[in-house]
Length: 223
Ligand SMILES: [Zn+2]
Image (cartoon, rainbow, N blue to C red):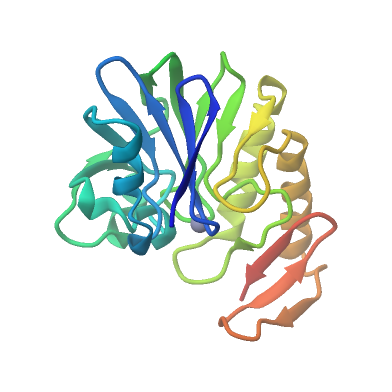
């Protein structure tokens, strides 16, 4: 069951306890960032808030973000993740610098491949608000196992985000605690580098085919 809450002006957070989405309402249309798991019925939650036409943009193509897509029919998604999407959804390309304006917000697309090859963050510089998908989190776990992930690229993207950290005050990740401060970009980066250097001891996950690797701040699920 997806719960909805108004976070700030025209900006709603939708949350089913596993993953969250963001809905911005404007005068003529609404902007939805991510669509949740298929069984979360995010479309129904959106329709309780607005009956305006909804433009959908995705932080990345994992199924906990793209699962509700078929109820909307189309979305903007970075081409690096198109292969993760089920048939029957019309995909539109999303790339660095693409801007989405709605309800007084102006989200700029920032490519941050690594968690997936098509991961992006949406950044409103004026509001100092960063939506990083799964790529920045307070403590994780950040999923970095499986063939559509790349730790090397993740580290490079965290460095890119770090260069923007002094322009952000509020970061809202799609999982676990929110909001968090921009200091977590550097913390995730520090631990990702330790992971790459083999400095984090891994413990086999009881269910998933990965290891839990805990850094100073962040847990990663890694192979
Ligand atoms: Zn996720």
